[in-house]
Image (cartoon, rainbow, N blue to C red; front, side, top):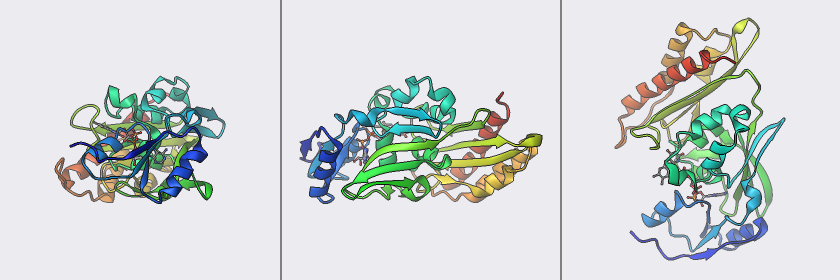
Amino acid sequence: MKMPPFDYACPATLAEAIALLSTHDGDAKVLAGGQSLVPILAFRLAAPKLLVDLRRLTELRTIKINPDGVALGAMVRWCDIESDKRLRTAHPLLVAAVAHVAHYQIRNRGTVGGSIAHADPAAEMPGIAMTCEAEIVATGKAGPRTIKAADFFQGALTTALMADEIIVEIRLPAWPAGRRWGFQEFARRRGDFALAAAALFYDTAAGGKATNAHVGVIGVADRPLRLPSVEAVLNGATIDAATIAKAEAATTAAVDPDSDIHASGAYRKALVGTMVERALKMAAEQTP
Ligand SMILES: Cc1cc2nc3c(=O)[nH]c(=O)nc-3n(C[C@H](O)[C@H](O)[C@H](O)COP(=O)(O)OP(=O)(O)OC[C@H]3O[C@@H](n4cnc5c(N)ncnc54)[C@H](O)[C@@H]3O)c2cc1C
């Protein structure tokens, strides 16, 4: 279908972009790479009066790495993450997850801010944000605010973002050397959205036991989930075959996915357990 008619603005400053959103009172939408928004318009699932294109806001395209962690500007694209060699040590879990996002053309235009704002429950970036306790910095007519990922995702395609707010940055806490991590995803074809995926990491305490375990899953609920019951299995344990089997069982017990046209709920429930099992094996086999 053809897109509904809309006006188009391409502001030169963030202030101008926010003013445009504010004056349209919920009837304007931000355009980042268009990789989700354009299909939504074409399917007539949204019909905003105005699109506010962020492409001239070059300050939103930076990747900052400092002792506090990694700060991704909202307009950073998947291909920017892929080509930034610093991120391979500064945040290997992010790099591994982004390798599963979509196809070449989409990766050249799709952005982290767009993915976080779109909040697809099967998308990798919201899953990484949840797993890593990311902070999302948004700014609107009331000024900037920082939202924890756990408060940001409120349901499928639903977030805590106000109509006049623009995501400017996604902050991932620092990644210590020696951290063990795993990312595993199952999709029908490479580049498709995940049927289920697991992102996890843990640090190693004295005696080789796991500590600070973070386990996130995507594709099994209306938003990305962290699984405290699985983290409890891992914390204080040696990550061996017995612990991994317990973590797999705890994962399937913790989720209750709906059935849809892509897979039954029962299939996704079993699949996500296998994803956690494989991600833990991947982490345990790493040479830190
Ligand atoms: C065929 C196909 C396959 C795909 N496969 C995957 C996949 O496997 N995994 C995956 O994660 N994604 C996948 N995607 C989506 C892709 O990753 C997009 O990058 C992502 O959805 C965001 O698109 P975008 O950055 O172009 O944002 P847009 O499409 O421009 O915007 C998306 C939404 O976010 C809002 N928005 C954008 N930027 C901001 C901002 N800074 N502040 C506030 N709101 C904002 C827009 O108003 C809109 O509502 C796929 C897309 C396609 C078309």
